[in-house]
Length: 369
Image: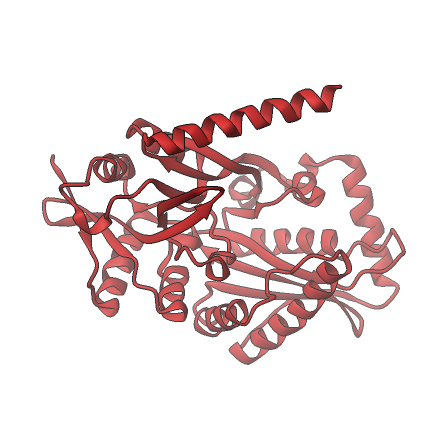
């Protein structure tokens, strides 16, 4: 059956929302490919990337957004297409993960092949050099490579998650699969917290309460990262506006979850989660830390959130990308997320790749000396 790929620069957002949500109901994506995230991105940025649509007969089987962007990299002026991003650093710092096309079966492979050879068929794309594939799976990178594009990986990160489907049916206690040391630390953390009073993990019940939880979480989050002289995830007016809009729009429908950990009257921290198609995605958090190494509010909050997810009947608790040790201790490696670029065979890019490889070899050799 023939797949037809279309590219469109002018489209009605309300019509796109209906089409996206219809396909979403059939392919069950991650939260970052749901209309909750994509619609909020388009609304808050005002961006109108190129719409990519794949059809078989009259049925839409894949959708995606490609933003044209020029990036100065070393001496090169690189023409990019960015998948489900805007190309504007302030916007893209939202950090999309589990990125790709909203697609059924093998449609992503066919779209990338079409894009790779689409200069004549789709002048709307322009004469581009590379496609930015941020936070995608190795499967997405493999599909781009199969389309004849060279893959340059800028960074990769393990994706740790806790599979809960067996736990939900009473077959496996998720914590029993973890180390005895971790279980001891969790008992110690709970006992330490209980000295302050009864320990509770509470979900925000209304939009106003969710926004209050979000603001409290953000303050603790920013305080932690400032103490390490790094910006937090909410350090721009745009990031705050985007997330407050997301929380406001999707608390009532269950797409966004704000959780507060308390012990007695003390607020120990917050979790900011997304929920989509049976999976809880932990996006950010903020905790009140102390110098007492028995005080581990983050570890305790995640463990209680996982237990909550079991009771709610969810399939998985996903920690998303990052190298924090609690992720590997509580979760299991479910694969890698890649931040990469799928490049055409352009002489300047070939030279850039050779220079990059040479630098990597020199750094390794110097590290051994």
